[in-house]
Image (cartoon, rainbow, N blue to C red):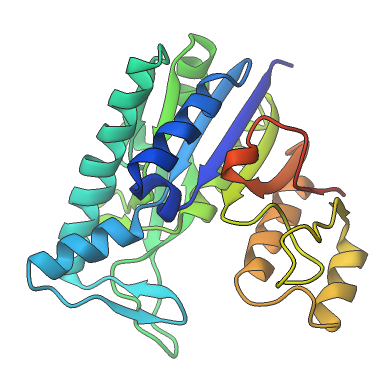
Amino acid sequence: MEKLTVIKVGGKIVEEENSLLALLERFSAIDGHKVLVHGGGRSATAIATKLGIESKMVDGRRITDEETLKVVTMVYGGLVNKSIVAKLQALGVNALGLTGADLNYMRSDKRPVKTVDYGFVGDVKEVNSELLSDLIAKGVVPVLAPLTHDKKGNMLNTNADTIAGESAKALAKHFDVTLVYCFEKKGVLLDANDDDSVIPEINRSLFDEYVAKGIITEGMIPKLENSFEAISSGVSKVIITKADELGNDSGTVIVA
């Protein structure tokens, strides 16, 4: 099986010109087939503010009402996505920007209302990887925006970590997939205040132990849950690392 690297990069890195260019240079140097999944929440918030649309968050998650959905569709699917594609083309990478609606690649259902109404947020139900894997095999590099659709004509805001995880799992039928989550830290840390306390490798029992001890907390828990789910669904390896360490053998490796 040919190797494929699926890389998810967070909004902060994507939204600062220097860090984005540095990341894309490292991304372009990765050998073999690759996919980039990006966020863009800060840009969406900034543009919503300019348009007089209030951004509402609950536990770090965006409430996507009708007006906010227009903004995230414009920003994620347009401004951020096409800017990345253009920069990759300048680096000799033949990139193609996509949302979940393109090629009917990723279908979601609108999240049901429980304690919080998140609005037009999608929970992924179906990933059609055949067409995408054909494009990848031809040398195309997909750049995936954090947007899906419900196949009834509506776009839905969808978490970028989820897009990366679901894409990696679906593409594992066609390739030997490594999934890399890039963010601001060097990996999963033993001590949140010590950037060099990277845990080199984590399995499920170690994860449970660290959560029980309060070493792994907050946003890192769902990231690692996604990682274990990816491993159990056929992804070969998951790495959590700092964006400027991309391509180096560093960070935290998640194993079965």
